[in-house]
Length: 157
Image (cartoon, rainbow, N blue to C red; front, side, top):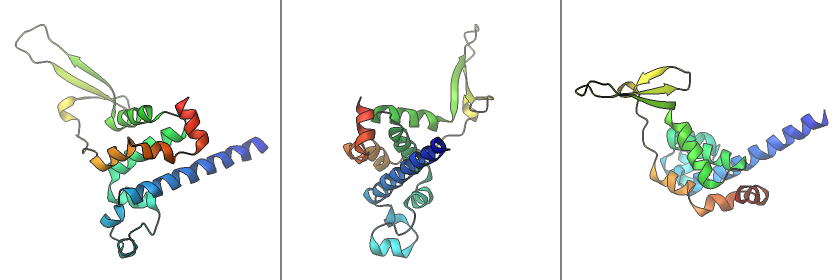
């Protein structure tokens, strides 16, 4: 029972750390300027839940940034966290190219989706590009410094 309560306490601490970092990221990215809430624009800060605001304003880029922060809180280095988030964003697990013995036939590329099905590359929907400020923030020194000291030591080791 005590192990279970300790685990939830640790999860609560991680959730609080994640929320604090995302709140600061929301401020640094000035997402309040793109928010439809007039309170946010007047106060020049997110007046609600920063995570929900980021999801509403920039869904793809915010989900990617959130993934990077979660990986870093789990102990991954910054470069590894960005790489893992990029792979998760791809939308597929594997990529194969079928080449023919007949010289005039073009090769065909297939992607294996996360559910195990295969799709031709030209039928794969394209994801919108990440917004540059999100990428710059995720690779900046600020994100490393925003981690709690114990997590930062784990990630650097």
